[in-house]
Length: 97
Image (cartoon, rainbow, N blue to C red; front, side, top):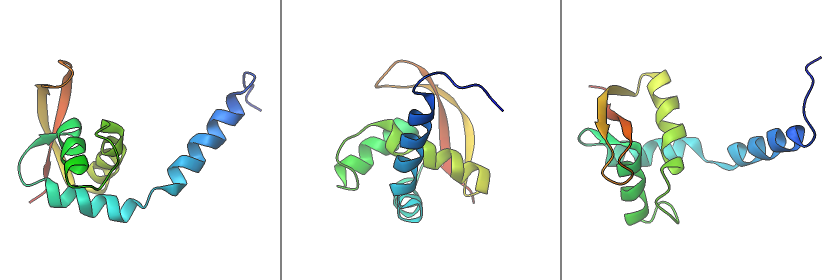
């Protein structure tokens, strides 16, 4: 059995509860509506907020779904760029043709 630190099991369960509340199919559809040209997760999240899909522009509204969509073959990662919001190097996504 894997040893866990105090409180670690709670964080795993709360993370799982949050994950289970997301309507992934709806979020995938929203992302595909937005992703008409190459974009970063933050750019997508900002557009999701502008369109009223989310209540903030946090990149975590898009990034986990983009990872899943890339694994499913719905979107492709096509390179890296410097994020205009954070200045960090980030992944660029596009819809798969």
